[in-house]
Image 1: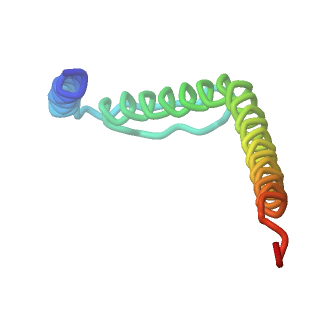
Image 2: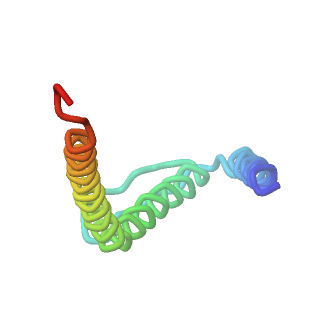
Length: 115
């Protein structure tokens, strides 16, 4: 359901962007204020340039915002790994001790030779 809704919204956005691009092909001067740089782009190009820059800046912001959570998740994964290894070692030691007890019980239970 969510996947089809995303697809539908994406298609609607694509249609709006393409329609905007077709309707706004007039060249405009784009100036980067503190720098002496002026570029002539179609209006839709300026719009798409701003959209791409916004997506990149937003993506970087979200990535940086999740940095602490990723660090904590990594720490917890390491802790789980260490605890699982500790549990595995303890189970091996327990199995070894159980085998030794069983072996000792079997030696005691065997009748002496010649009886």
